[in-house]
Length: 204
Image (cartoon, rainbow, N blue to C red; front, top):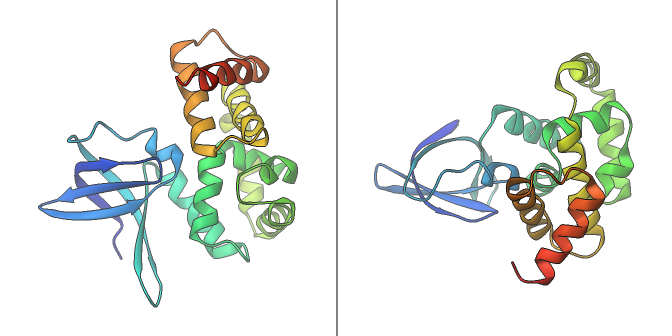
C-alpha cells in the first residue's frame, strides 16, 4: 500500500496532480479541496494517498489532509453505490466539516446539490453513515469545536447555488475562492453569488 508521496510537484490541474519522486512521475487524482492547498509547480510537497486496485488499473487518489482521506475511505468502504469517483465529487463539492454537519443533522438536501450525487444517493449516504456505529455520534460530539465557520458555510452555499445555475463545479469553486481572497469584506452567500456571476460574465 502506498500511503503517501513526497517529491516535487511537476504539474497540477483541479482534478489531478503529477509528482516527481526521485525521477519517477506519479499521477494522482485529487479533489478540489486538495488542489487549493497545493504549492506552486516545482515546489516540494507531500500528498497522502489511497491506492485503488481494479482489474484493469491501479489508481492513486491524493489528499492534502488526513481528514479528507479518512472521509474518502469512509464513503468508499461504507456507503453502497459510492465509488472513488463519487467520493472525490463529495470532497470537491463540500468541506469535510460541512459534510459531517450535514450527516449529523440528516441534511440530505445539501448533499444532493453536490455535482454527480442526486437525491437518492445523498439520502443513502446520510442513512448508511448515521447507521455506521460510532461515526455520527463521534461527529456530533466534535461538532461544538469543529462546526463549519460562518464564512465556510456561506462559501459552500454560494458554490452550490452557482452549480444549480448551471456552472461547472470547478468554475464555481474557483470563482468563490478568488472572491474570498480578493474581497474578504463580502460575507453573505447572496453577495458571493452576485459578485461571482459578474466576474465569470466578464471572463475574469
